[in-house]
Length: 148
Figure (tube, rainbow, N blue to C red):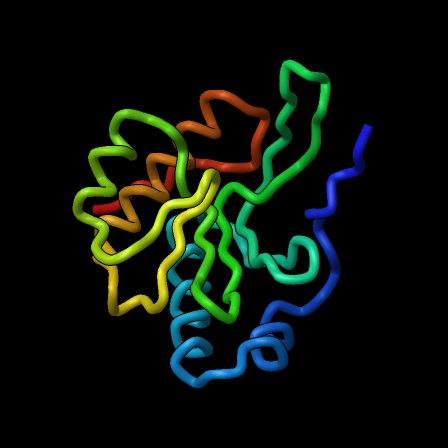
């Protein structure tokens, strides 16, 4: 069985952003995403694999028998676009995408060029929906952070 490549590492998140991200706009957006996802998940940022900043963790197991651990929320500041790992395939998530703004959808993530292109409130709702979904379907460290 294949070994999962995306595992928790001890790398420093701030050092990663400062050394990996090459544009000041993307650095600024990365630090803002760290603040937001930390607040929404109530979890500290940690590196997962060489390029993913994750928040919280959960254990998954597929029908095929493949299992592993993954961050509850996460993102990677890739050169072409941010990869946001915040989506769960629910009816509410699909509705929320309509208000997100300018993005492209992959199989498991949302790609955005910069934070100014998206609605942060819609992103927050997507993250909360994803936390709820993971909390209901997997063993996880996640808790739903109540917003006032």
